[in-house]
Length: 331
Image (cartoon, rainbow, N blue to C red):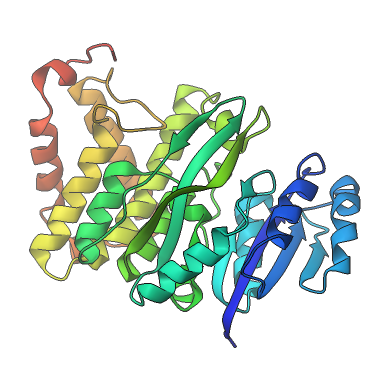
């Protein structure tokens, strides 16, 4: 049963002994005090357990130590499925939040009953210092999904989610690439269900350090990055295309996904850079995506897009500028 007004803060922990106490103190200091803090320690990790154990003095805190390693996505999913609050917030073990973070996000969701997620701007600290923001996702489901596809950023993942919608969206997919980029698929499922609301203040502090998971993605070789990029976009196809209410909308969504997959727009982030690929290499990449979609079996393109889905692919490939399709070096 969902408990009204309660925020469940889910904290997946793995080898977090150097940072977790500071993070948990930030949670304890929140001005929104109606909290349930679920900590899940992944696998055998006695150092993290010792760092978390003093916080059991707070009756709002529960710690579970897993005997089996679930990795970050599986551990986060366990927390999602065991939450009881009206809202859910994923708190990374090494990041910090301002004392009024949850209060301001909760007020934002209360003021926007249709919204699925509220999130703030982010400030980086540690090895990188800076500011990051993500525009709100507004309009109908198709509009919101197209906006999400354009930016593909992670910021709303750390926001406050309305759990009634989270139950419908489900958790993150667990993939052979340590679920790299799977927050994008998860956010797409949430964007189908409601708008994303931005609180334009840097209330979330993201710690950049050498052990950060996302930093390792870019150290993978090109083939591994290409495969992880493909798996993510197979998930995006399954999450986004059924949101179209008409055949035309579903065709438009499929074409937009292919463009984002095959062409890296200027200034847009991508795990795998396609700008040095020839047209034929991009066609082969697209075939790789279609094969993955069929293998996963989450969506049948002939049902949702129609028998002409390959014609849509041909059209997208024809749109690629000649200079880029020739495999010109990335600038």
